[in-house]
Image (cartoon, rainbow, N blue to C red; front, side):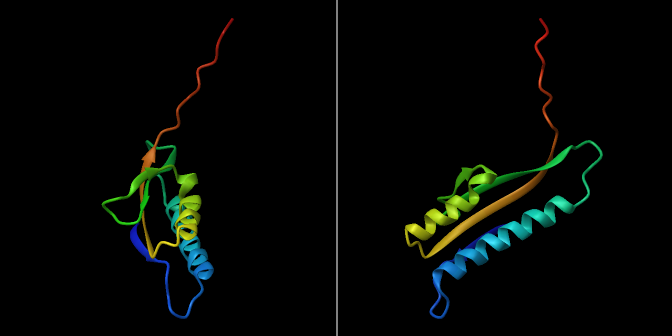
Length: 99
């Protein structure tokens, strides 16, 4: 998903636009997580970038996407660019200490 969302509209409140953006991001994540995993992967991982434009977007962890959207609302930005790319990943096993 690579998309620029407008946060201004003459007839719609900004709060409703923000909720629509968050809802679309959540729907996308749910849809991607439902897809069948390749046999050599443990889970779906996401590479995320957020910014005012595609060129100024910075890498953020998945759990900070919604807070980035809220920050754009507080700063009264006219738009926000969100990029979420899915990739299969392997879980990292923790090594236990033996004493």
